[in-house]
Image (cartoon, rainbow, N blue to C red; front, top):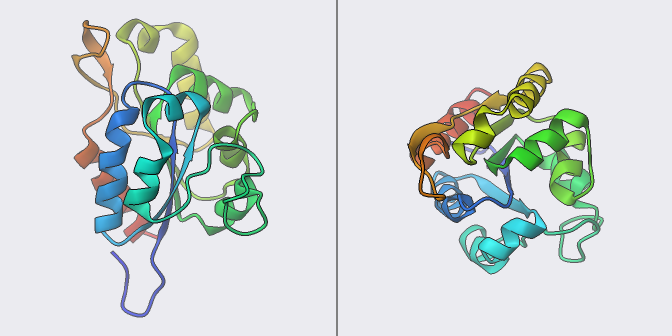
Length: 187
């Protein structure tokens, strides 16, 4: 993924609090194996579903779960420092809540604040209940973030954690990683 002598590409992986957060570890692992430096930012709810220690072990980097995180690299302001380093910002999974915050420019946690300060390409992988995904407010918010330059991957149709079948399932982690690598190689 990197040219000889070039520094590794840096991916920020934003993990929000849907059950699909469990698949984000697979994505982080595949990106690391491909040669990317991966820094994980998690919402409070994501950290309740998957422990930050999991991502730290996979990436070898401290996981940022709050603003002004003492373990964050640089000045301790990860929303600035990590945003400067990023070659790509991936949010997987992106819940309806996080998508709404991005659409409205709301920056009330480390993930959404970093979105506003990061000039790198933004790849968003939605995951939520099929009724939530189909709701007009969610669709309006998706259109807004796409208008701001975000690229979406997914969601897919299939069995959802709530037991229903429908569109809202996180895109296949392999497809997400493939798209990340395509974006990184084009930069």
